[in-house]
Amino acid sequence: MHEYDLEEIKREIVEGRSLTIKSNNLINALSADLKSIAKRQQLYERRMLMNSAVTYVVTVIVILMLTKIALDAQVNAVRSEGRDTKSRLEHVERELQIARRREEARETASREAAKLYELMSSGKRREFLTELNRVASLDVSPAERAMFEEGGRRARRELSQLSYQTGIEHARAGRYHEATQTLRESLDLEADAPHSAQAQYELARAHRALDQQKNAIFILMKLTETAAVADVLDEATLLLAECQVDVELYNDAKATLRTFLRRFPESPLKNDARQLLSELNLKY
Image (tube, rainbow, N blue to C red; front, top):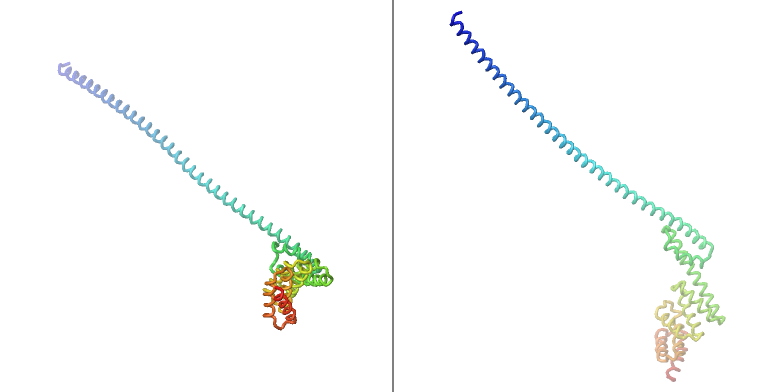
C-alpha cells in the first residue's frame, strides 16, 4: 500500500472522529435543549395548574358570593312578603273583630229595641222612659231612634199631664207636701208643656201653704219673667207680692204690685192688688 493511501485513510479516520465528536456535541446540545424545553414545559404546566387552581378558587368564591347575595335577596323578599302577609292578616283579624263587635252590638240593640217597643206599645210609660235613656248608646237605625224619641216625648207629655192633675187634686185636698212632689215631677218631665205655667203657679201656692215662701218667691219670679201664658201671669204676680209680704219684703212687694197694676190694668184681680198696695203704703 502506498503512503498516499495511508494518508488518505488517516485523514478519513480523523475526519470520522471529528464528525463523531461533532455528532456527539450536537447530540449533547440537542439533549440539553430537550431538557431545557422539558423544564420550561414543566414550569408552564405548573403555572397553568396554579392559574387553573386560582381561577377555580376565584370562580368558586365568586359563585358562592353571588349565590349568597341571591339567597339573601330571596330571603329578604320572603321575609318582606311574610311581614306583609302578617300585617294583612292582623288587619283582617282587626276588621273581623270590629265586625263581630258591631254584629254583637246590633243584636243587643235589636233585643233592647224590641223590649222598648213592647214597653211603649203596652202603655208602661214610666218603665219605657227609664229604659229610653239607653237608646243613645244603642246601634239602632235612624227610623227606630226617631220612633223611640217621639214615643219618649209623648210618654213624658202624658206623664207630666197626669202628675199635674194629681198635684192639683192633692192641693185641693190640702195635701200640700204631696202636691209639691207631683207638681215638681210634672215640671221635670216636661218643662215647656201647655200646663207648665199653671203647674208652676200651683207649685208656688203649695209651697206658700207649707210656709216655704222663699221657694214660692223663686218659682214666681222666674214664672213672671218667662211665662208666655197671659192668663196665669196676673195671678202669679199677685201671689208673688203676697209671698213677699209674708217674709216682710215690703218694698219688693210694693214694686211687684205697681208692676201688676201697670201690666194688667184689665185684670179681675186689680182691686185686690190696689187694696194690698194701699195697706202697704199706709203701714210701711
